[in-house]
Image (cartoon, rainbow, N blue to C red):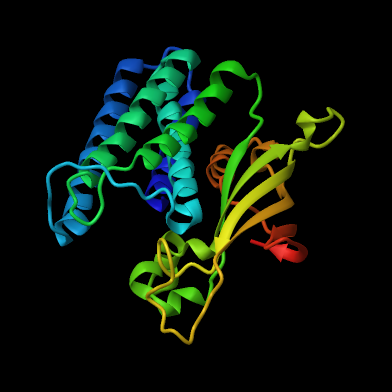
Length: 292
C-alpha cells in the first residue's frame, strides 16, 4: 500500500507542475514519460514481488482459493483501498498526458483492474494461496468508487481513508502480524481501520468544505486468518468487528496557492486525521476521546 502512496505522491507532483504549464505543452513527451515510467514501475514491482514473496513458497498449477472468511474481511477492505489509490494515481497520470477527463477515467479504470488482476493471477500459482474471487470483487469495488465519482458526479462525495494504531496481538504471532511497527502497519489488521469520509458541505452548502463526516470499519482479536488456533489454550481473544462514526478533515478542502501543499494535501487526504469517535462493537456503544 505504501508503495502506491509513494507512487501517488510522485505522480501528483509531476501532474500539478504539468497543469500549471501552458496549453501548448508537448503532450507527446508527457505521454512518453508517463507510459515509460508506469510500465517500468509495474514491471519492476512484479519482479520484486516475485523475488521477495512468491519465490519463498512452492508453486502449483493455477487454482482458486476462497479466503472470504479470513481476517473478518479486513483484508478485503485493504484490497478496495489499495485499488482506489492505484486508480487515482493512474487517472492523474492520464490527465497529465493530455487525455480528456472521461478518457482518463476509462483508461485508469481498465489499467487499474488489469494491474490488480495480474497480482491475483500470480497468487493463483502459489501452493499456499490461490487466486481469490473476493479479492477481485473488492479490487473492482475500489476502482469503481473512484471512477463513478469522476465520471458521473460533479463533486467527490466519498473519500476512502486509512488509519492505524499498534496492538498487543502482533507479539503473539509476529510472522503473520509483523515483527516491527513498519511491518505491522501492513500486516496487523487489528490495528487498521478503513474509513469513508464525506464532506459535510455535500449535505448543506453553508457548511465548510474541509470538514467531513466519517464512517469506519475495523476488527480486533485476530491472531490467525480464520481462527486463533496458533495461540496456546490458556490465551483467548474474542474476534469481533468494529463500526465507527466520527469526523475528519478534507485536506483538499483547504485552499492554498502552493503547488507543493496542494500535492501534499491531495496525497495525504487518504490518511485519516485523529478525531473523537463513537465505536459500536459486540453489541455495545463506547466513545474514544481520540481515535486513529
